[in-house]
Length: 119
Image (cartoon, rainbow, N blue to C red; front, side, top):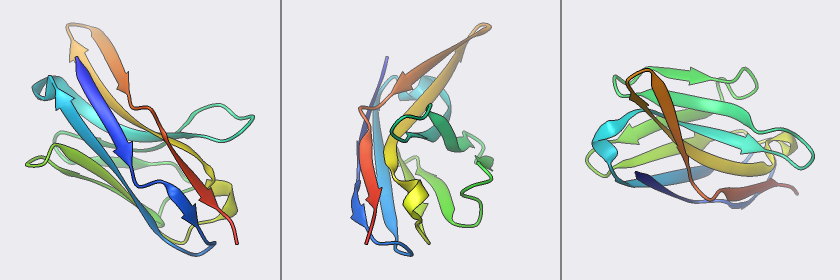
């Protein structure tokens, strides 16, 4: 089992910045990849960015060049640096950890943290 706790959400102005954190605990050794997802009101949850154990990253087109995902393995923490925020970035942001056991992927989720971009 993996437990994830997000923090860092809140209100930001358009063009501003915000940094989200995700602290992992439990069976951390089993994690193959981690990521950030978000869900806006009335919309489905969507991928924001992912990072593998080797450090490879992947971003949604909508956040490329503005958001940066990173991991601090010593602190068992993942980050999402969000710059040049737009109103359409407003959503609940969820931390995800994925583990592969045999041929089956298992996903763990945090409770979510609200990010609101508004003037």
